[in-house]
Length: 508
Image 1 (cartoon, rainbow, N blue to C red):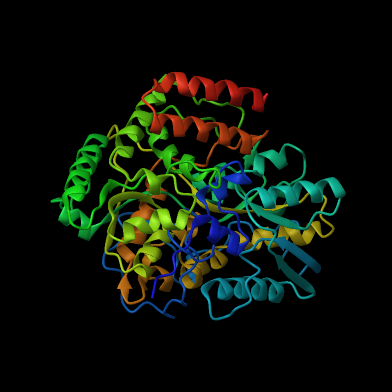
Image 2: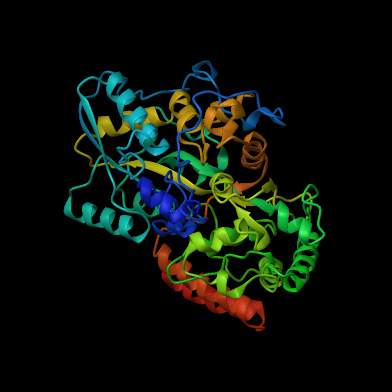
């Protein structure tokens, strides 16, 4: 029976979360899937939560202690009292209905991790606030969600909270979102990467619920067939290219052909998927595609050109048909079917690989310069309260509740697939003892989870540049240019110059 793999978009969509990906509304989608849903096939969206609930308690301590405290989540409530929970409306002081546009709170099947997560969140908030009713609604992800939010704002019929990712700046600039400092929630409660995209002009307009950075996923079986040692992953760009070329040559000569690097290319149905997986390389050049305020476009920065040249080289070791497939699940499953050696993956892919009966290991992305890191958050679900919500106090109290360590701990207790965002949870040394991070379908995943947690804690992680105007169109322009970079021999700089001109007009 074919394993069920989840795409980022599918995950986000299934959860109603937006994964994101980039433009925000499109951004998460770019990742290609919805937040907490289960991956259907290797998409960029967090592969939704495991297809079956994780064991109730860890069977044993993680195989290896975290390399640093920052990568852990508390196994007990002791790990943390929220630094400041809903000052404006303390627990028990709010009432009424809190409508949350988030697919992640819409699941009703209590036998699934998603359903268990939604039930825990809703039940516990309502118990802390007698007289309140939380109503989770799924309004889609990507363009569908963004359109729904714009329509609600125009019609004056906004819910209390919407999920999203990259479009926080866009709507905050319109005055649509409420400042979370009114709820006692501050940016320093979270890991820097997940929260940067929620800060606009010094104010916080969204609580990141869970997230993931990227790591290098290596298929153990195909690596060995290619004559590569999967226990010694490449650490530099040159090593990654050399290994991918070697694997490609070996794979083309093999009876069951395989390729070197499974590169995610742009496609009309996946606006943000390709850019999400390219940004880490670009960020490593210290010449990002834009700033964290969403006011600048830097598509043609000469300093970033080496990242595009790297993608060009890796694409030559890929399967073009798979790279440009419109099916993200199919694209990712390619590696799990022993048809590729390497690909850039998120935390949910740990679960998807096991669902696909693949044997994979995870390591930090190779670097151009050993001293310079660069990564991006994806599947970074953010809850933003509306300034003109009917139950504004309820909205602020709910967001404060979602930022509490005990709530965040449930990502590792019940949901899996992604990482919590609150420092108090990430810094607990028992992080990988949480049930959903310990084992999955009898396989130990603690070491893999710890790898991603360390990346989130140690590397220079940023959100996709949160352009405040026309983000989806800007990223479509970038995707068109990236497709030309991969498929032609034209000078990269001239290709990106054209994309830069288009993007600047859209942002003006």
